[in-house]
Length: 62
Image (cartoon, rainbow, N blue to C red; front, side):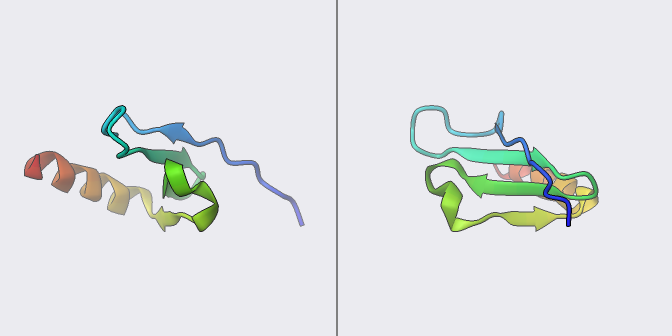
């Protein structure tokens, strides 16, 4: 079994220094998101189209 290393980056939509930090990762055929303050708690995985839809909804509700 090959172990894949995922590179997480802070989302440009995170709340800065206000404690609302979300990290995203390109996982090839999926996009991962996690809470940077609780990275060991796991992450959510979305298909790229679903992630794009989520981002659009967040943009509309701000």
